[in-house]
Length: 339
Ligand code: ASP
Image (tube, rainbow, N blue to C red; front, side):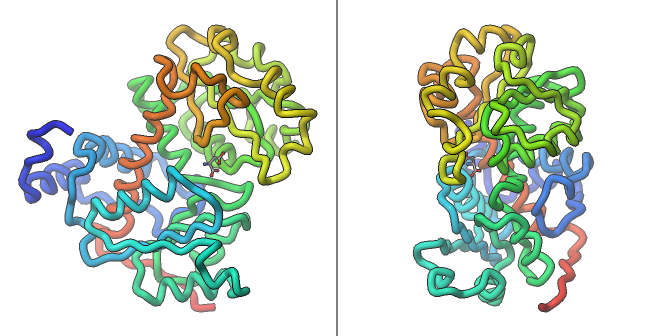
């Protein structure tokens, strides 16, 4: 971080952020799907996230007195660490529960677990679980704001928000009209795709999907994307190549002959990357399976890779989301129905 920014007195830094926010609020109290996010919400989130990004690890007091619970019932590195750090840098208290250390292991129901966490007056509960739709269901019945950090094969909205921020910055534009985004890989099991396709449609991108037939569910067409079994054909002239991981834990290996075969036909190599526009960028939500979804030399340090930029944007975006959701300018509170 710029030393001048790091040493800035808190009141000045907070004034700076508040000026950018201009008293605006998001249109939602929980975030479970990209369908809830309007273009106005996107503009607000990105204005604030970009400024938080400049301040990096600066400690703000915006959310002081609020708590956040990270309830991760599936593995996570990036999403969990960034939500936790983001909350702490906003002065929130945080705690974590997961599949190995929570009473879910003893058979407690999902709603009972979340209601319990909410009873600690948690302001936000970040949930990752294998049941599609579970965050949306609990959001209707608890006071805390629920953020979906990945529900089964369904959606992963904060991933899409940070991905679109990365693309928009690259294009220095407010939408993605005229830009070609190619998504390659295991579409069928990917919640990342579920949110990405929704945000790319909102931003008017042209979307191409390249995958083995067995990774291409029929509903993909309803999003108005073009599909191809030839990765070379799809990548030709693209602006963004977005590779997905083969989701072995969801049975994806049963849909392809072998990982080696998959890598040979769909893995992103330097030769394939060269078919895109010369200034095209390579993205991946992580974790990357080196030499399967993306060839090793292209992963973090390649000049066209934006994989670490995505990680950095994840932190700023989640901080913006937590501030805007927890510390509403209009003082409005969420309504919910007790079950
Ligand atoms: N981290 C992302 C997710 O949890 C992508 C992946 O695991 O492949 O969905």
